[in-house]
Length: 152
Image (cartoon, rainbow, N blue to C red; front, side):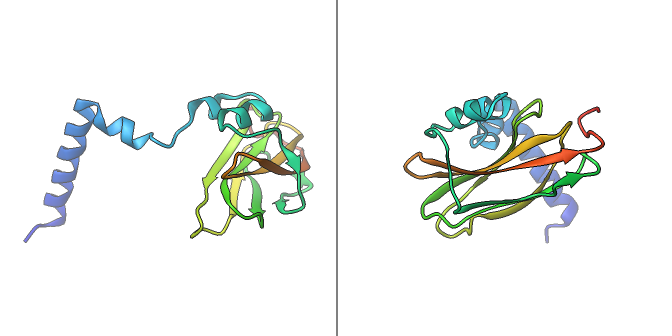
């Protein structure tokens, strides 16, 4: 019978071997788009995902507080009723890195997600739905921050 300790040792050994050969990192980060997370503007982030110019839509909703008393933890909800949504993004325009979260969506997943973001200052927040054909639709809301969360 394999004990939990033995299983853990085997897992660590396998992870070490994969890491030493360089195979583990490329599979672990296969869905990571560094250009999108390093982007400084909303348009640059969308360009990194191959999306067209965004269009405002009532089929995309963003729920966030009007005033965030603590910018270190700002709750947000993004959702869409559009058909064929491939990605749902949450972005904060004036953050050092604009992209806060990216959710991959399939037909089996309802495009409705809740997250928390760190905001350094008052800024526009965007929820962007990118469809399978590369079209981008967004909702926008200004969130006022009284105590900054990004070192402010």
